[in-house]
Image (tube, rainbow, N blue to C red):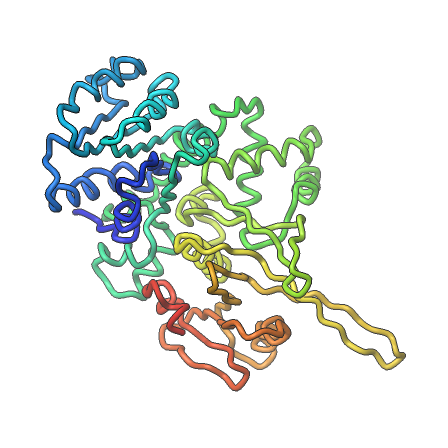
Length: 418
């Protein structure tokens, strides 16, 4: 079964023949290779490109082992280029090639080569590759399946589909497995043998137990403000006195570079400045997060917030945690200062939105709690509350829009159309 990934296909189409190396990045097993072949390859064939002008090598395959030598790889590709027409080069697992940067730079000098690369080990999945090709590379960051993509393969209704998505996430292979046991086994295998091991091997982590404890702490507290000092204190409370906050900071960086987690900074909306610490961390795939804590703490309110964050990032929005300072005049003439939080301050170009994630807004007290920060923003950009309710969709007298999590996730333009 082919999962159509139209969003990323359109991104590749828009970057076609742009004189840059297309670098497809993202967490392992999210579908990078599949995006290039068969999805993009089929697009090229359907639009008149001759098959002999699409050159693909799977560099982790035993029959292509000799091409991990950069000179042999270059000579092989160039032997296939027999005319001046455009050739499309797809190199899977490029990190297998020694000094692959020099090979790619050589291809850049050829006017009739359009080059696409991907890789799936920790070296390639770090931000190093982007740094190597600053100004010469064009990154396409791929996330696991969105809920909309997931539903294109799911045999059931949206309500049951979201329940499964919240539990197992959006890794493409997980989506096509049939039983709960198969899904859990697959996620646990990837957790133990791929994701954690990659981080350990790439960064030469000596105390892998500390890293695993940190991952568990982060997994247990998605959507909570934290920083290395707070995490260090948590380690101390667990009896681990050997780790330092500096080491914790390094571990967090390793997890970000491997695309396991993303960091969301706090932004002072009225002061228009970033607050460096504390920050929040969200998982790129909620199924991996659930596996990391052995499928405990399946709390829909926190998971919902993580899924909204990831969907916003997938749609290429910049996402910050909003801070609003509210001043109240007290009876004694003094002022009381209170910090209010907006879950997400979202912007892309001239589009800007303030978004609250609320599992429920039943009851006046709960509603007031969710709305206080939005009511104190003081500008005219859209203010949206996303609610875990299949049927909610309305706007109140203060101009605040209430939207179902289903409407948000299933409609790519849900924010603009709200």
